[in-house]
Length: 338
Image 1 (cartoon, rainbow, N blue to C red):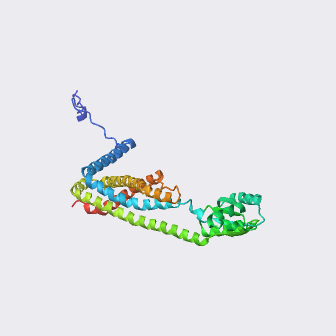
Image 2: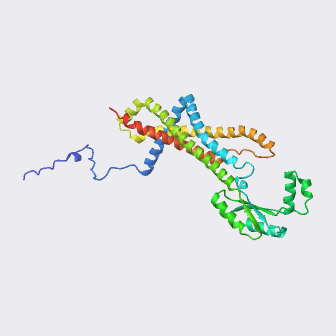
Image 3: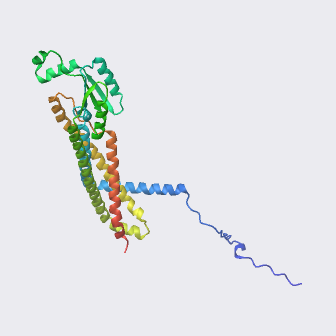
């Protein structure tokens, strides 16, 4: 009998040979969501720290850049706050547009009080005040300087008056309210100084338009300032950026530190602008209080409301971010490696 042939061992079956790994068809393992999120957060943290470090290396330049932006931000906000404070001078603007209702000479105290309560309950009326005939005569004697002559009159010639303060200073609404009040019983005449209301409305609209136009101009100036500042930082890091793009760095990775830098400039400018407004209004308030005291008024300028301050801070950060984004987007294509 012939000897049977022994099977030749395969390489993986030989003594001492390492077992061959079986190839499993299928997609490669991908990082999970948590790993990707941690990497994204770490990238943003590194960009933020790098931006802070670079700004800290140039404290004088960073300070003056934020200061210039703060001045541009504080001008429109300061004018807006001054307009809001002026509206409170001497009461409210609605008091300047009061409607005077002159009643019949036969209307007594009870009729006047009932009419005042009826008018005060209307939706478009802020307040209503009843002035009796006796009170009107007394005030007229004090203000006119004819007290002795008026005492010689056989009877009081002045009617009772209801002073109506509207909620809104609007010409069309005021005229409609005046006509409705004139139709009430016991009302002889309803008088409204529409010329003063028109002048007042024109002054307020002029102030609003001036502040709006100034805000647009200064916002454009802020974008130019932050864009030029970021452009200088880009030029200083041109070689570094070209190397990053050469090894495969994305545009988002290159853009991110500059966006943080623009937001930090805006944050610093917002803080400085808030402080400038607070100290500026406080410094101006001393003169305003002395002037108001000469006229027997306790008027004083209000400070910067917290809501306006945080809105100013948020707007400054957004402007810094937008200005940096525009500057980087403009120069990013020029930084492609050659």
